[in-house]
Length: 332
Ligand SMILES: C[S@@+](CC[C@H](N)C(=O)[O-])C[C@H]1O[C@@H](n2cnc3c(N)ncnc32)[C@H](O)[C@@H]1O
Image (cartoon, rainbow, N blue to C red; front, side, top):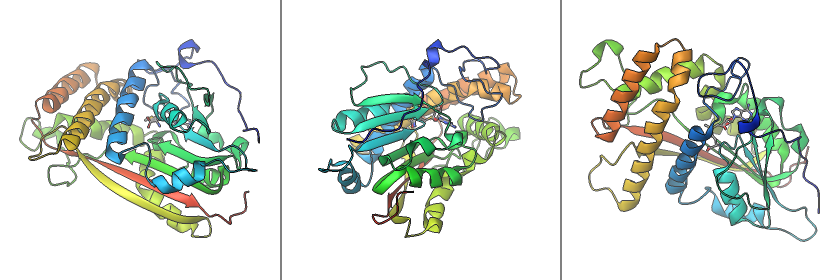
């Protein structure tokens, strides 16, 4: 059985002491472009968001046949491996390990998570900055998952080359990201104008997401990467990726639509809870971006009220993409 490459495992987030951090953060943000926190409240939000994505996909991943094929152990072949890049709380990592007990599942992140439930024996976490590449993992993985990590990546197109090299032939790349541009009830971009505060076409939730997005853009181009992934896969060509498909999903924020099924209501409710938590989580980054603490607090309270009482009707746009590395691709 082939050994999987490992990187040195550093202490968990809760044990590390760092300086220069944003309030509520345990990452040193002076040299990191990633601006969300990496603490327990954020990890509980990510657990909830993974629950939402599981509902949307009806499972842990799309392209079910391809993933099952890639993860079926074959006599004479190395044990299948899944890499979860930017694994966050480790929710997806651990659920995959439970679903595939004969597969090694490795979560990689800037911060090693401290999960609230036992880590399955076939799962482990490693600390690594993806901006330093994946050279230690060349030709090791049968599935690579990257969910909502674009903001922390300096050159996502380059990371896709690294992902391709880290996959074994026939391996599956799975990625998903949510758009920070909120959509109105007609699925059109909702653009807020601050001067119109209080008017019918104004939303504090959209304002917070817009400013949070601005704060992310100020840190680098990573946040622009997710809509480009399907085009980059096409550009890399069929000799590298033998199949790929994007899937756009529009999830209502809260159960405000008429005639929703129970499943749709549950998904919309999870989307609403995720956004309410994200409003709070974004506050330190908004302050660091120069918005006064009192203003942020007023916005967060008003935005929460909008969603709790379903005063504003909007959608969040998610883009799921999967691709299969060509079976006859050379492994390096
Ligand atoms: C929004 S969270 C998503 C977490 C998880 N993939 C999920 O979908 O629940 C982004 C994660 O990517 C990690 N991350 C961001 N930039 C990174 C980098 N350059 N290297 C490794 N991890 C990174 C963050 O620490 C964070 O845990």
